[in-house]
Image 1: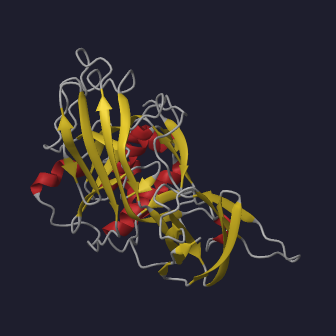
Image 2 (image 1 turned 60 degrees about the vertical axis):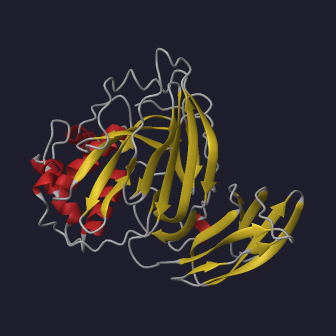
Image 3 (image 1 turned 30 degrees about the horizontal axis):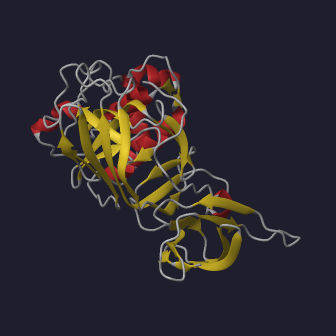
Length: 389
């Protein structure tokens, strides 16, 4: 899988508020809420020889990809992600699956879910899991902590398990193998991340460092009472951002494999990607103390910490999008505070999570002017506070 380090299309709010988080300096899951919708125009540089690959319509619990317009040289596609709580209480171990799910709990050449070492590890990781969501959470956290992004190395599940090294393919195959070994249906999603000015980007989203741009693989996991949900083993649990474009999913008939699955893509040698719309209403609303390396995820339990969010507006009620937010820590013994400067996304939403009950000081900077505000947080609650600057 290709990777690079240029500017990404996404404009995102970075929230690395470790000093304010319940759990102090511990890493964990930034729990997300909201929606993020992107509309892209994909235009082929040499459409006669390499037209834009056929992009399928597809949707699951948190993701929707829809082709809005297509001709011989371009495609307009909408991708919308809903970051809603994963309200799954399906019991674990899983039972009563239809026969059509057999292939999604069976081993494959590169996904050795019947290997004794993988079976034993899956049982160990999921021991005591309360439900399927809990079991998947444990598997995702374990893979995230025990695999280091590395290329080129063998990318089958067993080699990645033994070496602790793999690319997105390795993350994906090992996660699928552990899920299948635990009796949880999972399958391989083929696609790519939207390129930047050249091919890809490396950005930080809500304190989690991510790659953008390149052929990519991720996972789709089945919850018996909810349905299929995407997970990106490197960055996210139970959802992916709308810069993930689906090509096909193994075993999913509505996303057939392209006739020339590599040559026909041609995404990295000339296609251009123009944002028609990027409506990012994502918020960081909670914090879970795991895994050991930061990751983004959806709520799977009741609110654990305090969170405050809102819109930043001017005196006429217009949203302000060109501001900086400074979050101040508690005074030290000498009365001094350390601050963390954050940028707001185009939506003008600000959000802070992982807060304990009490008063927290923030500052808003617009241009060269600054105003200070106090916000009240309550552990276990999400509070909305629109700020008028």
